[in-house]
Image 1 (cartoon, rainbow, N blue to C red):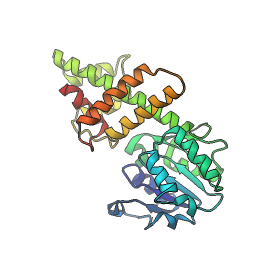
Image 2: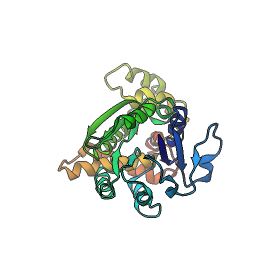
Image 3: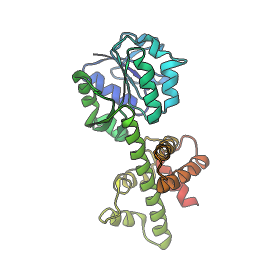
Image 4: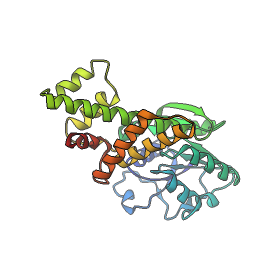
Length: 286
């Protein structure tokens, strides 16, 4: 199957590697020329998005909905190049309402749109163990689901278009909230004189454990590497998306809003390139 892929960042590159290894012909595009350096089996390089006109599926792995719109409708004009009956698969983190609007606009061109964001990080993208959340009525045909099975271990068909992006934002908001709480609790324990590694080990054998305590702290925080591969700015954006969604649905989102305000402050005081796990450093300095 001819597949176009837009966005060869930390997640996109290993995803493309897996698709190539599975025998798919990939035409890839990225604004950075360096994205095409160092490949063992490189994808075909597109010099413009319009070179994807023969692709049956185009996968977008982009940071936010504004960039997706730019690629599809504005400077990239990808939508006008794709043939009728093709599929745009947005696997990045976009806003749910924006995804519904994109699906409607593309449907007018005879192009299907499915949101299929992922969870699992760079390691999951490399190993093909991502969790994939699919939004779209009658979303995937058989061959298309097979493509996702190359990339992920668990595939959920969530509901109508936008549902995948809604679940992704809410999931990341929960992840961000638990990491913030873990950072505050660990810093409190440390100031009381308890070794951080001892505290984390106790929490991981107690009822307060979470993905943040079981994975992020041992892998990225305690070793001091802070290199999970997911930026603080993207996590801050996703929490804001989740809070906006709750408010649109008439929910106060008290806990998520409080966490979102803290992440926004951290994002404003740390380097723009900071990994999201570096919020732990921000908590410790306050």
